[in-house]
Image (tube, rainbow, N blue to C red; front, side, top):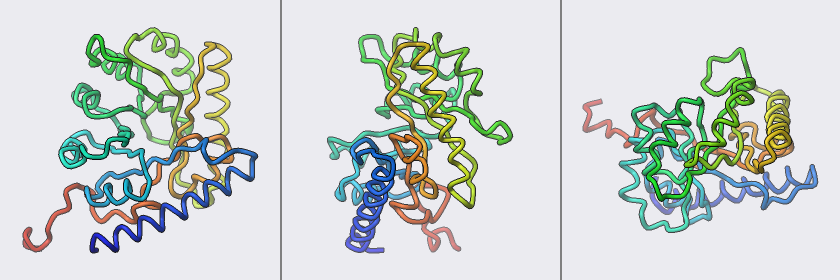
Length: 249
């Protein structure tokens, strides 16, 4: 795909997404400015990220620390871009993640929270984080159990280098997006309970992806993570894309 076609495609996708956000917000009396679009750029090339930035996207989510480290060399001319880590953070990648990303949106355990807290240099501002909550107990996913969030929240509040902004979740990929509503509502209720108990603001609810973000917005999402809806289908599981001819395929 040529750069011009790529730009036109992402421009059109971005416009369509914004229309969906506005429509979903209007249904529940919210304003579209309350919702942040995060372009999930994992496995997509630098050219696609630059095209999305040019279209108006300012927040980007990456799942792999090493992948983003390679991309970041080519992305230092986007001064207002905000880079979110949204994948499963391994202990040995914590320091690098703190150095590379503006936010870590998928803190899945007390141990990882402590490692992030220790990785932030003294004198630097606290790093904004979200706590990933495993709302579906039957799913084999990472994240805090609901009880673990309650038990560990005050401990994390006292970690001086963490700025806890809110919660995130990934419900099962239902064919009918409306079936995810109960999980989104559950995360919102959990957030509200923590706010009441701990008397701190938790403004961010990161929930909703390409197939269910409209329902998530109706249930209070303030941050939607969209990959396919913005960039189109991923071509490969790894970045950079392999040249099939060079690989002899």
